[in-house]
Image: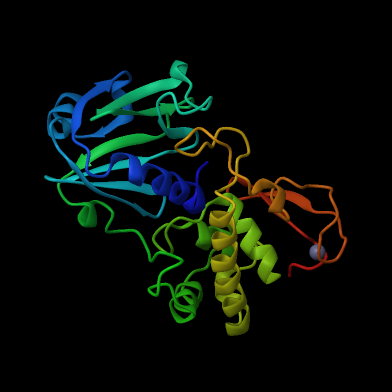
Length: 269
Ligand SMILES: [Zn+2]
């Protein structure tokens, strides 16, 4: 399940490969991987257009075209890989191929929960997303205000893409551990110093993960088909039973908001 650091890594890898190139042809192998418009119009909208820029917004890859935008959301298992770049490019799960001048980019997706879309205006299409956690728009005050008005577990608040964009299950758990806050705490009960610690932990965790080119649990690959290197740096996620690096208490796993959650019962309150 690629989150902000994984999508950022993919975008950084693809940017130099696709920006400035014209999209010659689009091959749709699985129609339902196209969210909008219908697949035939999607192909017609893209073919012949030059890619002017490539960026990330939340967990979306945003390609700026001469007319409109190409959006990609990787869902659980989606990959955007330069074809023939590495072993991560598994053609069995190829859903859409973008054939650009001199390069093919494959959208592969085992579980088929990811999608591509063409939209006239990315700002409108992604308008409900909250601030980017690593931007100046994400502030302690803003996070405190969002927490104060919500009677939900703090973990659920962090997963809410309208509150902040790009954090998912892994980095929510890691940030909450970093801040010493239990995932089930009601968001509205957090004190300002706790919100401040959480704000720092979110940003620090995401920056470290980007530095390690993301976390590969199973499916995530960068645009060259390589695994990310951040898994070894995770302190709670996927580490049930292992001693907490901070206090030695065994890490516990529980289900919160329907998601596997990992935390330390010793130092997260
Ligand atoms: Zn601990």
